[in-house]
Length: 563
Image 1 (cartoon, rainbow, N blue to C red):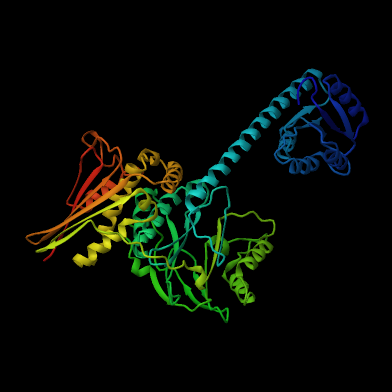
Image 2 (tube, rainbow, N blue to C red):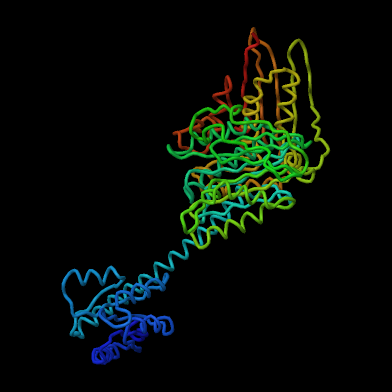
């Protein structure tokens, strides 16, 4: 509406005299007018005439002004259509009823031209403000959609795409607190994880970035699932505020399809379905608290190994599925899920489940994120056997308990090969120190990631100074790594014995520009800092950590007792 062409006004009054008077006054304000003699006519004319402002009498036949206003306001949606009540009543109770019904203002009969003009101008300002707010809301919503798209791609963009993996996350809001990660390990195991952060929306979704970082880094480097869950737990414990935690289901399918390892911490039952009878043959119940609650978790307690056969199915889901409600306030529940499984014998449960869920919920709004995954255990779900990547040692010596190893990986090899398992496996073969594998794996991984990311690729850790920065950081990393054909990383290992102490000197040199390590703060400023934790971890696990050259050489000394 504006002063030169304010639009169309709907006058609702059962007294024709009142309508004539108000029509005359509104025409002076530039309005086109339409008229209704009762509340039902007003509702009909609102739907067909699309008025910009409504003047509503209170006491009328058929449908009174209160009910007509309630129905009209229910249909306006995001559009602001002001309704000004016309009343001869001046007591507070009557005026209060006008506002409660949805009225935006009121005028007391007989009409005053100055008051009418003033109220119209006030409504015009409110309408303009409402349009601006709606525009801002639309812009914010669009920005959220873009951010969510980037966010999801950064987290789930590297997930496995396979027709035998059916999965869906249906968020309750733009951002989902549920997440889903999958990856193949170097030993061709399939790792599939779903998780559910406390609540939903952006605050819950932000925790997905560090989980994705740990999961993909550790899985690709050959970590056991127990180590991966411990790593995620430590990361979340350091990052999440008190009261926020992460329920998780993790499935590891071995390449021979003989068994699966399943882990459930704070989630609904994980179901294993017999491929022939379609019966539920195992319910993997939660065996521990969600991640991020305790500083340390006993991963052996929350995990179990289950024998499977080819064509068996594994179903994972979040509690948003079973806790979905209909208009009768009934939960979808486990019994209905079991019924869907029972009636889909010989075919996929996935499509039928969402059909039944939508039918059950009807028009009810979704109040929690819903995740559902169906894994069919067939050979095609696993990767083909690749030729084993071999690295040739430039130098390998063993002399009275001492040995040295130097490996150089050029840019093209770094793009295709993860050198950490090669190094760790060599150390394990030479030293037989399986108990030290997690610590050595962590130290070498962090040294390598720093050399590759900050040295060869030139990424800045400042990008990860806040949760939103993680998305940009990983997008740049993936793009740079995919195009990498220059640069190098050199690993030098020297092992020696000193009394009852065995020592490995790990020297990692990259082709990057380095940094001024004499004048750089390498420790964490506070516990909420999102970058630099890897260096602190190396420093905690190793006897010492130092830098040489122009800052492109990191030297860590790792020790253990041989007594």
